[in-house]
Length: 281
Image 1 (tube, rainbow, N blue to C red):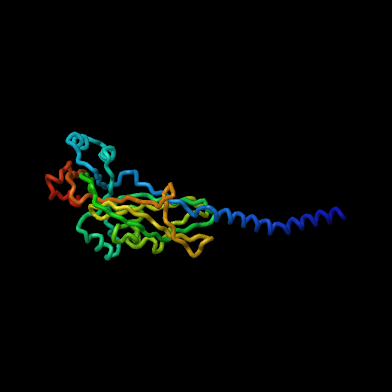
Image 2: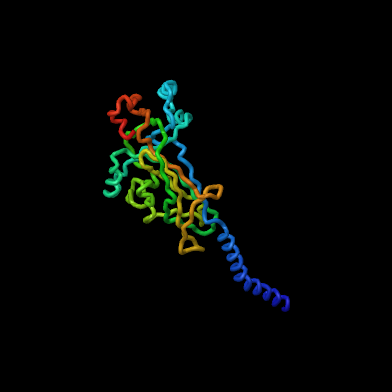
């Protein structure tokens, strides 16, 4: 009988200790989780060729380079090997609100975007939600590019992601998806969530600098999590711990050399400036 009672007492004691033990373990896990960075961010230029693109170069092409360019089966890669920097023709957001369309067309020029992908990663056990951002320390200067080669659009829908103008709408990234809400502020009713079993998330960004300008800027993002439900603004940093700086440019205002190709034969816009495909360059 005493042996039975002793075993029963041990079982009851173990059962009684389950609650405190689990609580202690949960507290320890939360403490460790809270010590982890809420998220890290990497920004990488888009590597693949856009459907419609323009390449800007800091020098004019030689006659031999023009000959090779015209004969190349992969003009995009060839121009990149010469130091060209790719831009994309920014698709018209035809389903955007009228106010946005009016602003989009106010410049009288076709817009070009400098695209990148922002990847957000987190090791947190609990969810971290990024629900706003703002541009910081924006500086712009005149472009030094001397040549531009364009592969103009033949029609097509916008990519999924966000679009940002530098300036005047630098703090208003808008939705580009061909869905309801196109042209509206992205963070009005959307967010990026990581943690809670989802290790990464991200956005594709089309950033439009003023024509003839090269801009550099930083980003602050606002996030909420279990440990800071009231939210917090943080400055994004690079892998060296310094404030992240993103470079964005547009086509030069008055390039010395302009070429276009695509559905039409190669055309020098310097010789035929009125050619419709030269519009925007």
